[in-house]
Image (cartoon, rainbow, N blue to C red; front, side):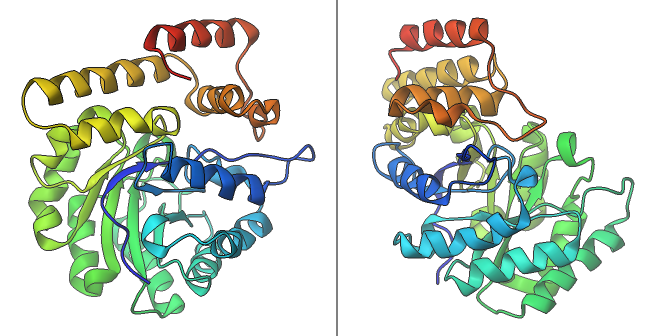
Length: 303
């Protein structure tokens, strides 16, 4: 098993069956598309965009085996294994590593608010110690708008000092680039093998210039090819044009509820309307929103 490769990741959306259970076979097929025609270097299933916190524990526990059976490599996948109960997070992380996937994206326990760094350190320490694998690679998940449980640069440094390379990186979904900069300043970023991923592809080159590892984004479900083109573009006018296309795609995605929009786009791409199913309490796009999104995509010449 190897650490996740750097580059463009999609926080993969999740397909549901009619009874609301996760459709693992469809998800693995979709993630294969993201890694080929979708322009992504890796996938991050069971995160926020994947409605991971709304998916039953038994479905999440079974998913890594489905990815193993489908032939995914460890370096291609970062599984979301965060949960309010640290015991559930431990079980989800064990399921991932037992199936051959050492890279996990872990929200802090997020029900109680205003908890101390000592408490968060204890939670991550328990996960690492009870999983008990030297090849485990934990990516901390900083998303204070949703979790209301921020991860401070000081906590990141403390965890790195205690657990070394097991604390492999951080996804920064704060939307505040200065937060990413502060964590890079504290950890050294990729120069010290600590991989920080902002959550918007509009920050791609701004981040790479100071030591981020790439991006993990919800909108790359639809616009991964644009982000990959920008990553590969040579400096100057080519990169400027590529980033302008990235920004246009992200602007469209930002107009709508992100998960519902990405699912509607996949329904159109695949011709499978079941992709629009959402896990309650989230709902799909209204007919008016869908029509507006369709017009926006036509203007971008996408999908």
